[in-house]
Image 1 (cartoon, helix red, strand yellow):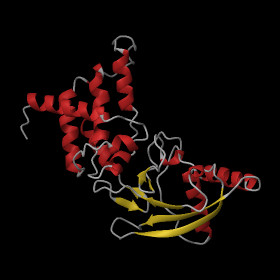
Image 2: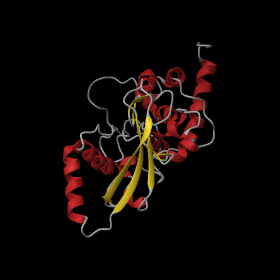
Image 3: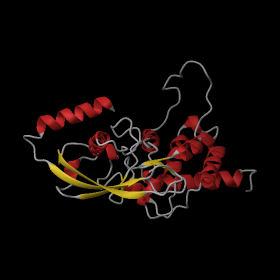
Length: 272
């Protein structure tokens, strides 16, 4: 984070004289911990360069707050390349902001107008309790994966990639589902806070591949059961999850999840 901040500040000092700058009004959710009620707090930033990313803007805000002796805004981040799924921010009422197919770290200030007011909130879901400010606990996703998101393989050297033929269409569909980064945007976008698209993506890419056939039936039962246990809501069938997904994972994988689940239940000894 220090290296990133140095880069941001040096970029700001070098280009501010030649580039048009922006003034932005921020309304950010501040919450000390999960037990204390939170509230929206107003901040104003001037001299913002349009090429800055959204998270770089938050870095600059936090630098200003630290200089004033105030508590910086807590937010999740890691790779800042749209890969890790950590930057879970609800920006102006949408998961990761108004641009489609990107995460919050890929959102740039040039997509806003000078003088805009920006609302920044954490994910809102019972299964994602707020830890502090904009950080939520997404361990529920980890527990769903632990319930069945794995395959049984023999230990030893890696097998030759061509020993198990797989058709191109199956590979492409499996890769499409495997693109899920577990950011939780689908949950935040759903009015029922459903995790169906996330679970569908994890079930789908393993169900499609030969390596995932051993646990195929038990996997979907266990993962759906854990999803329900975590308190996620039912699917609304509105497609908001796929619309806001930064990896553009389609709802067709939810259809596969439903088929896999029905097939597993019809042949399962578990009648619950």
